[in-house]
Image 1 (tube, one colour):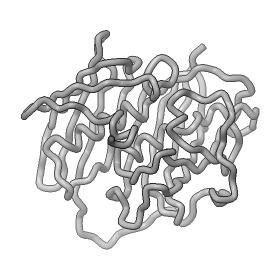
Image 2 (tube, rainbow, N blue to C red; image 1 turned 180 degrees about the vertical axis):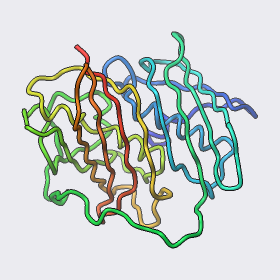
Image 3 (cartoon, rainbow, N blue to C red; image 1 turned 90 degrees about the horizontal axis):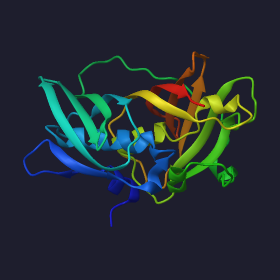
Image 4 (cartoon, rainbow, N blue to C red; image 1 turned 180 degrees about the horizontal axis):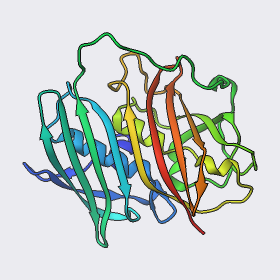
Length: 266
């Protein structure tokens, strides 16, 4: 059997068509529907399968979450333009009640050049082997597929003065991290806003944009690797907050980042 995440994000593509069927199962739910990482992961996986090759990895990916992802759905990929080095693609997921999510992606091959730089260090965090995995409550249903170890910043619902959370995470069932899995991990942490709260409050992602800095899987990656995810929110108002996240390897390589617009419900 395929890995649970792979199974949850793989469409049944119609033969010779850019369309296919998808089913969101309750074990991946967060609130009224599947959590954003599964929705985004399914879109990224399908888009990579349509008119893409290994020489053009995913570089930029944007999703708008329009409605809860529940039950059976239809996924459609629409390549927009493919040039010498870059391909632009869009996709959407539709359910019984209408559109669930829309997405756009940029796939691009490496370009020759000498410029290269990256942040020198990730935030300070304890080694994952020195931290006990979190087994508390409340947690959304989908979190049962993941292992969390809080390592940096504040805990959720701690009333901290800064909205910042850092944790080591990985899938409970080992999985070699590819682009869809990295996108899912970027959306797997508790929202940074929860660090400032003292009581739970419903929230929902409205829009999500991710940038990937390396072709995945990494050459030295292992299925049981831990990844450090840091999330921080600097601005909230009008019933919404922004959030920025970074995903680091254990050997301090930044592999992806994302930005979200989150609705504060209730």
